Image (cartoon, rainbow, N blue to C red; front, side):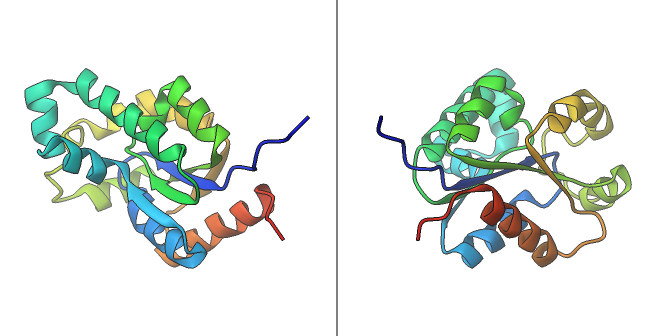
Length: 173
């Protein structure tokens, strides 16, 4: 029986302001992989900001396009993907992304999230971030791997992601 090539992607997920994009760029650079920020890709594809997408087309439409993008990018080889905070809450999307690589949930303390979000008005769900955090917490806890980012610089977190990836994903010789 022929075996499928091992998955080589990395998907970073977690709540807003935990460092997914910043860390993802560093990880991609270190591993010489392609980086994609799913939120930025969604904005590019739809031609409007996330806030405008939420207000004009609604959250269900946003989540549908977000899931499509996650599946599309997960199917490509050697990708580091920073997902939106709610992207992998969907069990089907999570399962598809897990099939193609390592999924790491980045965590930060509520105090760190509050500090990181202060003055950021571009996130449509940031107004009630504490309630959203509580509603998503169980889903984040169920993610395969976790790294706590509070008190760490992005390079430290990226190093942890790379180490985890190297120990979890079979490397070709």
